[in-house]
Length: 590
Image 1 (tube, one colour):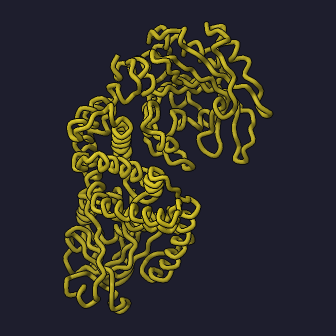
Image 2 (cartoon, one colour):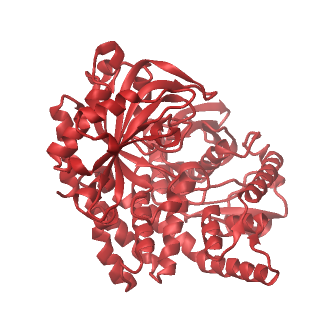
Image 3 (cartoon, helix red, strand yellow):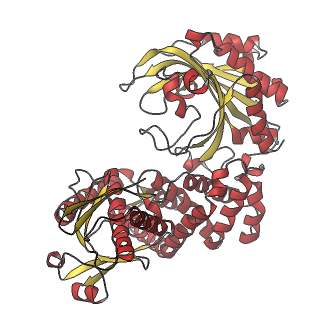
């Protein structure tokens, strides 16, 4: 069976068993306490907790899906036979068992074995099971132990496990959770692989970590799709299945190296490029915070292996196109956003390629210097400066150092980062207090939003001058993490058509992926070169000029994003008068 047939087989099986097939949600988690969607149950949290009624929204309490997932805890493990960052999870649910008599442990076990043995023709003799052995807060799951025997698994192949392995959840800081049973399968090579986890949701973990019984119980299951495909296609790992094998030959051709000789390197490249494609399709853009940092981290890690294998990173868009072609029928958002994905990839590749060689020279020089002093630890300040100046994520520097037998301290790095944040906060308060930026108590996620909105004011200013004429000049601005407010000189109310033209022009420039360039110049020189400046009396003799492609050029103290693609979608909320010949636009980024 090919991977599409396997995926369809699962969904069709549960459709036949009266389950409603629900679509995958975005990789950007609906739960604000976590960065990504890490499991199929995540979007169903309110239903599993009894706070929402699935009958009202789905017409049934039986659900199934193929959910896109992304987990960050396994990034360093990628390259072995089983680990991935992005992966697909097949799952089925029975929600609200106690109140409604729907299937619970026995039904979940019966359905799982029926699908594996009767639909996929796996050998019952190769299946083994784990169950929760109990602890001081939750008793041993004897019921599951007996049910597995009832359905044909001898007790010798059912082993008890502790809370770390066999108590699942919650996804965030609180939520539904419970004991679970994991299904393992013995492959031809003697390797035993976990393929399915059945979670018997009976508890709710509160913020303080204590457990209380749920008002209802639920079944929540998850199959690691990549692992299942590897089992059914009788491959050592999913990287040899049709989920990835279309990349192996092209990688061998462009590297002139063998997959068998470079398994780890090839696998890291294939996994990370696939993951990057799906993240960008769901709206994640490279940055130094949150989801964007993870995207940047995995993409730059993949690029490093291109350099190590002596492959031109200019080949990356070609491989991304193959990924989109291979997955686009199942996940149409990849095809719909192919041009956007490739543009983001090309910009990030271009940016990191410029500094990678110089950065590697510096870190290897630092390692050699430390070796001569018999020191085997790279100082946190060097690692942070390296991150600041060359864009090397901490984890990438850590990986390079580890290969050379060196340690780096995350605590020292974090301390340098905190000190930098404090300096940046004070600088923002001092420099931008009269330039539209409100004081920041912490240089955090809100600051990232402000940075984007601040950059958007430059695009808005330029767009107004293009549409309304060069008589438009900035009269003031105010930015919060939620919106921007921009005041400008103009003698009348803007028409609906004019507002739409301004909005469309800003969004056009965002989609073009314009690079934001920063230069330090003499004030007089900057003005002579045509940089806009409407608060001349406030500027020092030397200023920073921010140029956004060939569209905008302004004197400004910052902060700004690195590329307009980071901004998302610009939307004007309101246009109004604030004084004689002065208009005001309020806008947001979506």
